[in-house]
Amino acid sequence: MQFFLAITGRIFLVKLVRMIRAMNHTNGKIVQLEDVIKVYPAGDGAITVLNRINLAINQGEFVAIVGASGNGKSTLLNIISGIDHPSSGEVIVSGSNLTKLSEEELTRWRGKHIGIVFQFFQLLPALNLLQNVILPMDFAKMGTRKERLARAKYLLDLVGLGDQMGKLPSQVSGGQQQRAAIARALSNDPPLLVADEPTGNLDAHTSADVFDLFSELVEEGKTLIMVTHDEDLACQIPRRIEVANGEIVFDGSCNEIVGSPSS
Image (cartoon, rainbow, N blue to C red; front, side, top):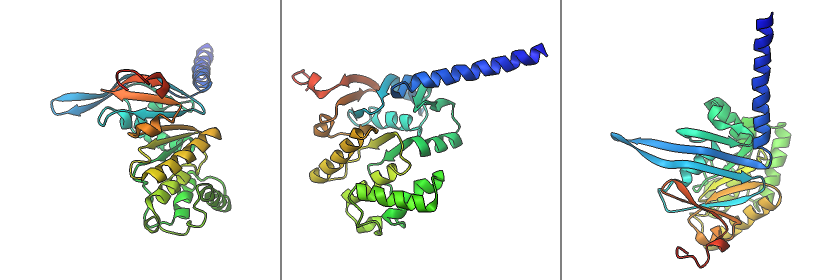
């Protein structure tokens, strides 16, 4: 009996510690990376893409991740999104330690906690814009069919596509496809949005429109992390993180680097 009580007490203590850790991680921090390393095998050796990344992002922040191609920006974003896995270190996002979750658990977690906007939109070509926005809600079994339809229409109205919802992706412009992709990313009302080069295939005017939409979402309380090569856009974002050779070499605002030798 004493042995049973001791085991039960230990299980309760472990659960309590995990709960307290999760509470601490979500106390204003929606993203926390601790000593994250990512290594890919390459022939007889290995390539270190991320080297001991330590990063915290607070709820409601708008963050740009910049740097030359091949320096680890997209890998960092994929690890935050749970799409890729670190070789070592911890990744805590929205109170969950992603390194402890199975693939099935990660899929369910992404459906509830994160919205992803891709450079090439990734809309399903056989579905119209309305159906594309409804799809993540169907997977997550969010609300009733009527509620999903109403929310999808609301989101398409929000991004200025209320009159285009019955069209296929191929029947609208690239900028409209990206707006639809943003509406889809918002479908399950996630607290965190990540965007990988979301303006990379858009003209300057459309890029500015997409950026304005992102800014409005942050003002409404969303957290947004955007990888971009566009330095002009990056300098309009309050926090700029520069990645070089797999390490964070700068973390601050553009105002802090104006006049520096590298600017």
